[in-house]
Each structure stands twice: as C-alpha cells, then as structure tokens.
Image (cartoon, rainbow, N blue to C red; front, side):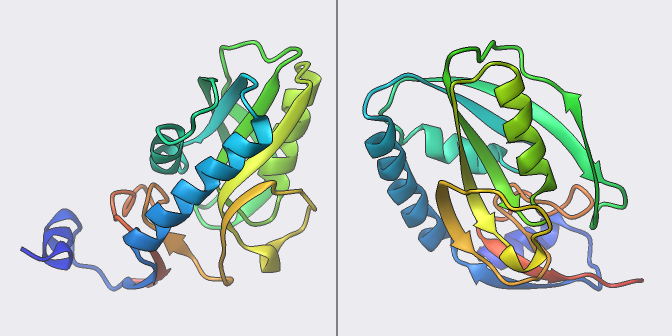
Length: 189
C-alpha cells in the first residue's frame, strides 16, 4: 500500500491541499548532519537538551538518537498561537521543564522559527534560569516571517512563507504523523 493511500485513511477527506516540500529521505539526511554539527560544537561536554513541545517531538526523537555527546533531556511547552495559525506575539510557558539548567550548556530543539517570538522568549527564560550557554537548533526557519531576530545555531532547512505540516508539525492537531514536510493550503470550508 502506498504511503499516500495509507495517509488518506488517517485523515478525513478535506479541502486542504498538501504538497511535499521536503521528502522524508532528505529530512533524515539533514538530521544526521545536524547531529554531527552538534557533536562537533559540544565536543563531549554534557548538554541539557530542551525539546519544545509539541511540534519538535519527532525531530528531537530522531536527532537525539544520533547525537554522541552526553545529553540530558527535558521538555517545555510554550503557547503563542491564538488561532492555531498566527502567532499572537505573547508567549507563555504552558508546561515548564523540571530539570535545573543553572551553570549548564543548553540546546533548544525547536520545530520551526518564524516570527522569532517563541525562540527569543525561551532563550531568555533559560538564561534567567541560570544556563551558562544556550544554543538553538531548529528543523525549519521561515525568515520572511521574522519579527524578532534570533540566532539559529543549528538549522535544518530554510523554507518559504507557506504553512507547513508533517514530521511532528501540525495544523489543528492533524498531519503530525506525515513522514515528510509538506505545504498545506488551508481551505475555509
């Protein structure tokens, strides 16, 4: 059974049009490359990996299994989208980390950086908690939407200003299980 046929059973028929932007194979290759870049940077120093839920969970799962550097893993959930599509710019912690980061190297794993508000908020949040060094790893960057400048230290791909789903990234909690990154044209129906 083809992947598209399997997926048509997973999602109700809708007016939303999906197009593959980054095939699963290319994503997997880039995740492997990112792991090597991260290992090179940290050079054996222990790192606290902070995974931003929910969109980054699949990316993070694949990435941390390839990282050879000693890591500790924690999770944080931020909220900033008031309608599921557009960032409100007001970021808040919905569920905080449990692990202390004081005097530690911290690597944030994020699915996508668009406006930059969430990434900027989290970087500041971690420094306020005492982190000695905070680096950002993002699967996707959408610089055309940037309103707050942030440094992405480890980047998967730069993407156009289109709504994307798959590989953990959702629209209305759907499409997270797509194996690749797709653009979605959202129907008003």
